[in-house]
Image (tube, rainbow, N blue to C red; front, side):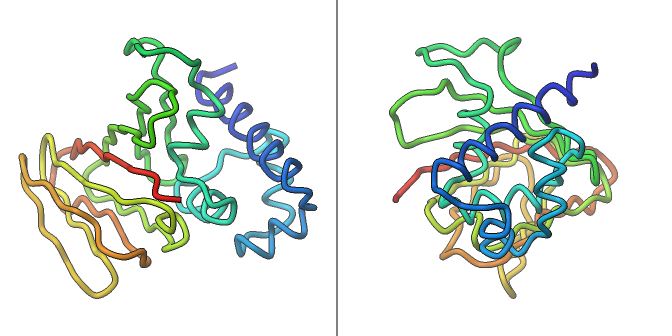
Amino acid sequence: MKKNDDIDSRIGARIRTERESRGWSLTDLAEKASVSRAMIYKIERGDSSPTANLLGKLTGAFGLSMSALMARAEVRQGRMLRKADQPVWTDPETGYVRRHVSPRSDMPLDLVQVALPAGKAVPMPASAYAFLRQLIWVLEGELVFVEGEVRHEMKQGDCLELGPPMDCVFKNEGKHTCIYAVAALSVA
């Protein structure tokens, strides 16, 4: 079993746990997330690797951030999370690599490192940000962050506070991988 298959299985199991803990059927979640029932079923069984956009829709329906879902699926409680133990997930559609950096704790803050390959774009629905305040900090390369109708062109060292929740797109229009950090603060 490949590393990504293992995390995909745990993400699927966590999605099923979140759905069942709310007393929702597959149909309920499908309607709330605007995702097909069949796709949710495949993800919960670990038969399909979810895209970043799809995870954004599902976590938005739950009122969770992607970071919270990943932490619940992967991260053990404790004050230190060594790099070797940080969950890494790769979007099968874009090759976007997401590393959950922060330890699981009762703090309302999560830190995530993302590597977005050159020429790739990751759209995220507004629902993925409904209960969060976020900062994006570009560590390497260049990132274009499109927030509704507003285009933010960011270079290494730039940091952006996201505005109110709206559909957005993370784009790497450059020739090299862009590495950025996301600090997500839960406000719900």
